[in-house]
Image (cartoon, rainbow, N blue to C red; front, side, top):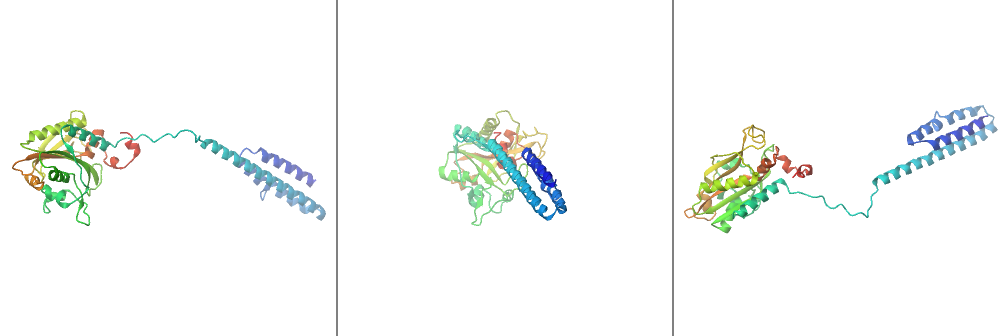
Length: 340
């Protein structure tokens, strides 16, 4: 009687294993049949009622049934694993003979776009584009621009000093000094580039940003020339009429000096973090070149004069593309940069 029960149990269990739909169902069958409290364990408890000779024979049948069931379970597991692997291969399959998609199309950084437009504008007006080193001497960065070591204007430019006494340039104005010495008058030049200051980073300040300096040295240059070129610059950059104001400002390297402010294009003049709630953004300091700067550049101020200006390319890009946080321009996030 126990032998028939065992055979019926074995056949039924193997059939259930082969019909299992997934690995979870297979594991449930294994626990139900082969577990410590499973069906085969219950059968083995009844063997104590058998005679010794009968017990040995039924024990062999019990072990054979258990091994057969374990083999069927292992075979089914391999089938499930093979099916899962094939499904993954089908999902990940690719035709290696197809041509590569090629590099993703790129775009110029918004600051680069602004810089190139300004360069095109000024070269059309007869200006030369110059560049200079980002590691500068103290003389070129400060002294030659009429900012001696005891001048309070140095406090406005928190500087990264190097161990050899040089520094990371705080503005692109040193290129004006190099341009005057190398090219001499008459001179029309612009100098775009990267500058560095030990600024506390926020929505409108970065420790690394981009500027552009401009200078025109000739005979009988006046403020009228300066205003004309500045209006031409702003009209070319913003491609629309913008509200500006010109007010007196002090800069050691120009005399007289002016601040050219632009009404904030982010908030329309209502006030925002970028313009520090003032509605205006200081955009373009400018003025007539100080005689001391001309002398330091090897030019006689009694024979020549000129104007100079400087503007932030980073700030211009923020105004042009209505970017409310300067840190977006330096973060390198392709999701942001692909918009341009």
